[in-house]
Image (tube, rainbow, N blue to C red; front, top):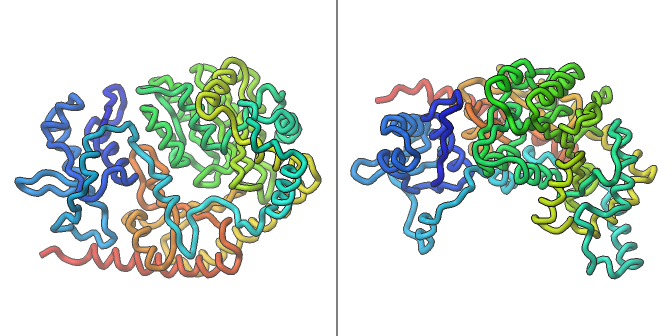
Length: 495
């Protein structure tokens, strides 16, 4: 188990150790019953004091992540929904136990863990109902391409991406006030690969990466994997708190600032135009890279969002990521990366090292849709359909949710950010909710450090309207029952 601590951070060393172990447990990289190093062994391994590790283990035990057995050691335990301690460890001997001795460098992989869970009421996935996507059009387009260009399956794409697609994307991005040439566009396998490319190219052990808090969990996973030190900046109704960002940057020079200024994931907030200008000024002053992730700017409900950071950046500090998969065809995995200067050239080299270029067939399939009137009509209809679902969810939550629960109404995107009473742990609630065939994203996964456990993210885009209505009512029922059970448990005297 590789744990690195940074003595230059304001986060105590015991808290850093605690968070590193929690990340691994919540990512299921440390399984139930896995034996952890002794206090002395871990203190020696990561060069900290004995008492520092004792404090970390005490906090882990208090929060239910580990169990200590006299004379046997310290073992991982997963948090049970009823919060009762486990007297016995269920882990059995396995022929694969030898693998525990092989060190890895994967400190966290929480998002993929939640992504694998399926349920009747799917509030986890920020993807769009397949019934709202142009599947038949793309199916016919792929058949046409294969009939007219049968050799396409035996042809590699250019590492940078198909040139006709990149040329058409310059027009598409112009609508977002981004003036770019085809030579400044890189096609990726979705925006997740774009995040990974940027991290592989520019982020290494000990580098400072600043993210919003909360933020997209899979981005945290990538930055942690690169060995970065992540410093969070809170989000309010106008986006990232740039006043707090400025204070952080005065003390810690960040290598990278990761932000979703437009329909932020998970909260749905929009960064004001004034804060966007201030964020750029901070990046210029600190010579930092801004990674602007834009998954949902087309899906606005009342007013168009402000201009992208990239459109306001003449100096090339912003790397812009745009996902097309979500609004067209998730299976095609088409992402767009825009950057300038040597930063762009280095990213193209990293893409070549990674996979030699994205699949050509899927790039050719989406190209005709991009430059057609069908694309504009599709996006317009999508906005209407998703706004109806957003409004229906909010109406049902207002009618059926127990008191003490609040949420932010997003102006765009597909997510709703709920706040439950402070004593409620939504990790525990997720396990409980499986009895109701419900799944969602616990808020703790969205924080790099100092997790807040009483939030959760609901996506309203994946289910059709009848199933969504049914699911929201079931969610409200499950929430009320869980809160009541939690209150009852907290009031039960310990004998």
